[in-house]
Image (cartoon, rainbow, N blue to C red; front, side, top):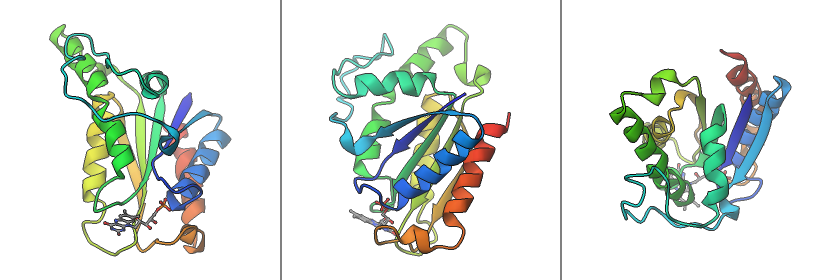
Length: 193
Ligand SMILES: Cc1cc2nc3c(=O)[nH]c(=O)nc-3n(C[C@H](O)[C@H](O)[C@H](O)COP(=O)(O)O)c2cc1C
């Protein structure tokens, strides 16, 4: 069992970093091997919509995502953490998600051969989010975007933890039980069959 944690905030040690750190500690306590990707450290572009992956399911761009694609393909569990930026995931996360067009095409190619990888997949995904305001629909866009990201990867969406009214760096530490909940959710994430 290996868990890929995707850190989607540009702010180091910010709220969603702390949430993901605790979640991954929970996963590790359940025996998982952890890999971490810090999107802010990567140099890559968005999808070029060049159609280069249409026939192969492989992206033609040679950038830092070359190292990330195998982790997206092979991890049994994926957890992505993002603050809310203008009612969605960060631009950095969205660029990464757009680049999952290549695995999406691979899935479509498999379907044409009569195989739906989603039906056979036991891979699971989770979302962690924080936003500053109280908006009723604050997390709607992020949730649906990440659900489709996981779908492209044949990963079953297992749930989310989203916190409102969390703004300045480290504010999540002052939210009673928030990081403990992330730890527990991480542990459950890898224990559920
Ligand atoms: C560019 C930018 C856009 C933001 N947009 C929103 C928003 O639309 N709604 C909201 O509630 N908070 C918004 N925020 C606040 C962050 O979501 C919030 O501070 C969050 O806790 C940051 O998490 P982090 O420390 O993991 O980066 C925005 C912050 C920035 C810098």
